[in-house]
Image 1 (cartoon, rainbow over the protein chains, first blue to last red):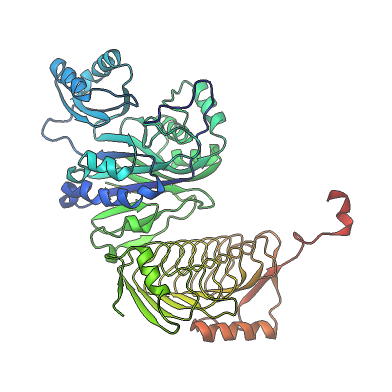
Image 2: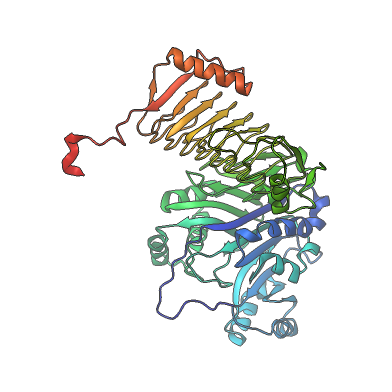
Length: 314
Length: 230
């Protein structure tokens, strides 16, 4: 596992060939099959991004009311994830699930800060890669299909998934550089493409107090989006700020608890194909990642137009 | 010959089986499921049917410099760069085509019965790209030679930086690209389009009512008036 560039060497963040995947289920009957529908999408796009991957799954809280808070942990260093989970469950009202390269916690929202502080103190190498009421995020380096297999993705349910397969061309292959970026609770961003002026946009965001987890160019777009959403923009307005502030090429898939958006740059330099039926909306970099979906022959299949923001709500 | 089945054979196996066919041979490809690079690099005249949707580069590098080559029909849609660098033969797409249809084709004909996405006929080098429906932005970008026929509407930046290729448009033009200009339609043009309509079967196109777009030749010609700039 790569641990990052030598100290003192600045990293660039661009990557030109990656795979993006989104699947929003309209038919609740499909929800138990979310993982088994997404797994072949990830396998099909593994060649677009064999370095690392990330998968975000949104599901409703089962039974325990609406005070649950999900915390997704990961690390680029070896961590005894069972020990992390045991420690959290032993100390807090929590459910914890260890993964090969991370852990998923479900805690009460009032205790979330305390849990994260406790983990950070005991395991400083552990990072929180996502929080939210609905979302969990799994990230790992290595072939994406191997990651999907190692966590048994095909058995996971939910109503919305977004995933990324990464081919890093300029920045380090680490878990923290991997998508999706989760710049605010339940907000996920995956990106295929590259931005050229991201360093200056990052500086201006930092000057306004925005904190970054990596030097990845895509994270800049994610943080900008979160800042605009936080200031009251709707998703479409916030996405227009990415087009205004950032130069570069992109197909972005953005998800919230409410649904999914897709947007491409003015030149449509990066591919995207949408398939929609009355049971689901799916987006992927290439059609072959959609070819297995139920009733794909009857789906409305189209390419998103450049600079048009497409949004589907749950 | 049994159909070539992409559910059971890898793309390389499918293409090797096609390559092994004698000239004049026929083949069917079933369950393509958007796979890339199907039926590429085939020189001989063959008759190939793809029963479903194909991925990138379908039929690319096909045919010979004398214009002969395989005739491929796709009963579905195709991904990026169908018929890229085609030398001869024909590709007919019954559905729509994604970006860069017929890019860099030296010869042969790429026919799209639906719409084509951005940059159809980019860097065309002598081949023919015929689209029954609409074409996305920047069709004919830097096209050097050959013919592009768009039955429907053309998107923004049509013919940007075009060289000696010619574009005919049956519908509207959102905007012309740099150095592209609309030109007078001559009798020779009408004849060219008439033949293309007969060849493609796109008979909703009226050869006498298309617009001709070519190069203003201001971008790529050196001018002695500007010698100081060179």
